[in-house]
Each structure stands twice: as structure tokens, then as C-alpha cells.
Length: 405
Image 1 (cartoon, rainbow, N blue to C red):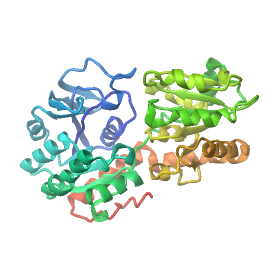
Image 2 (image 1 turned 90 degrees about the horizontal axis):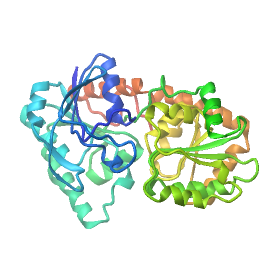
Image 3 (image 1 turned 30 degrees about the vertical axis):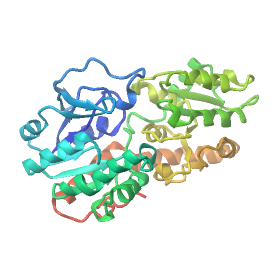
């Protein structure tokens, strides 16, 4: 099978879907191409670690052809644009199926329009969490209605199915865009469990380099530190646990301007030595920090690093919203009331107070990562979805791989 992925941006070295899924599909024998822009990922604009200096052209990366086309007619701070020559690039690539990585946006319309003109079947995935949508804003509501009532129906004959990457994206597809369950198939984001795995020697070495005792408990957050991640709630919750002998708090990732200083100032004076901010860490080094930790917390918006931390034996703690529900299916985590530092502190305290339970939950995290979220499993699942879509089978929330949540 030949697959073409069309995505707004592709930044080497990150763990997002467009950085991993195509390569694991190629390993399974599919002929895979990525058609994208030379622009940095919008969420990384202005942050340490954002790609720079990439030129349009054709590149080869681990058996996948990456074609970067010039971005034209940029608007919305450069996050919306069209790709010059997209239809010609798709015609030249000649895929059996097109995978579009968003149900909305200028590039989605362009890709589906090209697919319709070429008679090319497509699937559209969705990782729009509710924090990325706000239909109460009049202009935003009108934008979504344009896709729901005009654009997505216009390309209904081209789109063979939709792939929500979690329970909340499924709700967004259903409630915001009117997509029925019969046109959806579950899949997920993933992690390379061969790379993201617990390493005892890395745990000890990383702790030594950070000044963390070998027997201390470590709470981790990893990802972009911006207002939507609500890391201040985590610091406030940790403050109540961070007395003498209490856990360390390890914050790994680039911080938006001013946030790092506020987080440091928020730490209690007798606990400041237990709060560690690393700044940007390359994806290749993340397993070391995840191995050094015991509990990984996402107090606000979710991130792909949740799955990677799970693969490194971290217990997951996330808010009580739908976005994280499928990440703790094996009893490998706990939730708290979003925005409540008291609720988060209580959840963390109960985990830290029961070492045997914590150890068991850490093993459960690894098993869930291997059995459901490994990129090999995700790649096989999506290839199955493509086959079902091409054969005209009703998806009804699942392929032969079954429902996930």
C-alpha cells in the first residue's frame, strides 16, 4: 500500500504523530511519503528547540520521502496556508490513500480538493482536544459551521473515514462537526517503546547529575511549559508535599517567557532545592529524565509525552477531563479535578503513601504502552483502518483491532 501524509509541518526529532507514524508504517512495508511545508511547528514558534533554516525540497528520512513545498497565502500568524504545487505532488506520488492530519484548516481543504480532483480516497484524523476549540466565540463558531455544513460534506465522497486519536477528539468530531460513529475508527498517539523504556542506570546517572538522591520520589512534568499546561497548579500542589524528605519536582521542557521565573518564585522557601527546571531537552534525551521519575503529571492540556512517560514506567496523573481517560485503562494512573491544586495534592499524596501500589502501577503503565500505544501497534491499526476504508467497510468506532475506549 502507498500512503501519502499531508500535514502542516514536520519537525525532525519530535514525538508527534506526523514524526513517528509514517516511519513505522514504512517499516511494515508500506510505501510512505510526507508532504508538508518548511515551516516550524506552530506550537513551537518562538520556543527553544524550534526548527529553523529548512528549505523547500525533497528529502529522504529513514525510508520515508519528505517533500517540503513552499507555503503560500499565510494567515492567522502563519499557522494557516496553502502548499504550492500540492496537487501535482500528490499526482506524482500516486498513493493508494491520502492521510490528512486535521479535519479543519486551509491545508485540509486544499488536500481534499486535490484528492477529489485526482479521484484519490482519503482518511482524516483528529487530535483536536477541547482546549483547542472554543465554539462560544462567534467567529470560531462560524468557522466550524463552515466546515460542518459546507466543506466536509463537499468532500464526503473523498473522505472514507475519520480517525479520532482519543475520546475527546471523538467527541469533537461528533458534537462539533456532526460526524457519525459509523464513519470513525479509533486510534491513538503513540511512543516507540524500544526507545522510551525504563533504564535503571540512566535513572541513577540522571539523578546524580541533577542532585537528586537515589531513594527520593520524583514527580515529573515534561513538555512545553505554557499557560495551557497549568504547571502553576502542579507547583502549588507539590508545595504542600515538599517538606523535609518530600518529593522532588522535575519540570522538563521549554518555558514561555516569564513562566520559569514565576514557577521558581512560587516554590516554598524550604523546598526550592527540590524544584528543578531543565529548559529544552532534545527528544533523544527524554527517556533519561523519564526513567529518573516515578509519577508523571499533566495538570492542564494533554501532550504526546504522556504516552512516552508511560512507556518509561511512570504512573500517569491527569485532569478529570476526557482527554486522558484512555491513557489509564490498565489502572496505571489517577485523575484529579482540573484547576484544583488541593485535589491534585491529594491524588499525589495517596500515590506516594503506598509504595507497593505505586510500583505495581508503574508496571501497568509499561504494559499499556506496549500493548496499545506502541507505534508498531498504532501503525498496524491505521493500516487496517485504511484497508477497511478502501473496502467500503463501515468503521463504527473500530477496525478489527477493536475499540480502544
